[in-house]
Amino acid sequence: MVQQYFNTKYIVFEFKNYNEQITQKEIYTTEKYLYEKALRRVAVIISRRGADENALTAARGSLRETGKLILCLSDKDIMDLIDIKDKNEQSTGNFFEAMLDDLLIHLEK
Image 1 (cartoon, helix red, strand yellow):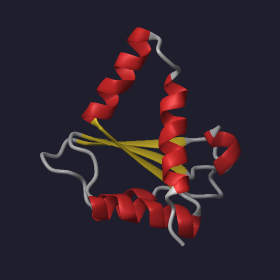
Image 2: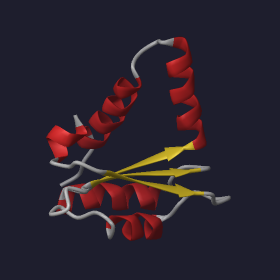
Image 3: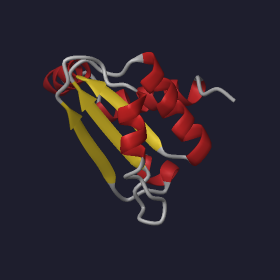
């Protein structure tokens, strides 16, 4: 799905072991690693506490303005994914599809 919709072949994963939520600074830093010509337009940032509201706004802005997708996951999201996998409730792909749908539906102008 990501490959088809975002014309990407690679996904950048970044792990932040911060005590606090990540900020827009981390979003902008990660955005610099994403290049359309290198088929690298998607990133996943995994952090202990997730992203603050300014970081989420920056991620939406990156998607809207440059077409670069940056998803922010917290430890809780990772635990939810493990539970989904253990219980075989749904595919983990559905988790990400729901996250992406929510992001795209609420994307501002």
